[in-house]
Length: 76
Image (tube, rainbow, N blue to C red):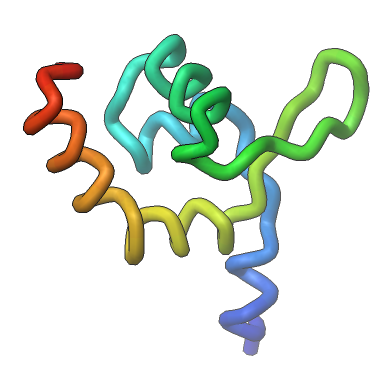
């Protein structure tokens, strides 16, 4: 039986992240630049990945509050 924790330590590429966080690519990179979204890890010069556990933590803890803040500040 697979360990649940090992499942959350998988790497996700950008398209997989965007399936979980329904925002555009440029919005995602802007959030990263502002420190509002986890930074990716670079596997090579052209390959960026995110740990699934980091994305789940963002969804569980920050996603709703960040989105609400942006709506209130007129960023959407």
